[in-house]
Length: 84
Image (cartoon, rainbow, N blue to C red):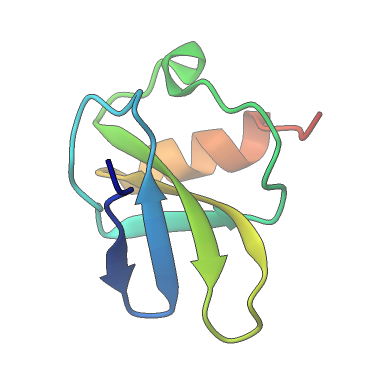
């Protein structure tokens, strides 16, 4: 079965099978570490969040895109996330 991709402004996204939600929320963070293990449940966000493998269009950089329903969750992620 082919991998479904999502094209949004600036990124080609590949959904994680672990996502509980199938949405790309308006608040996003690009993580330039394609192999870093990100377990969204471990952050205990207040709102919904999704994770995607991502290719950034402007430079072809591979990484991950985390999208958040709430700005406060983005801030929490940036404060707590440390790549492997």
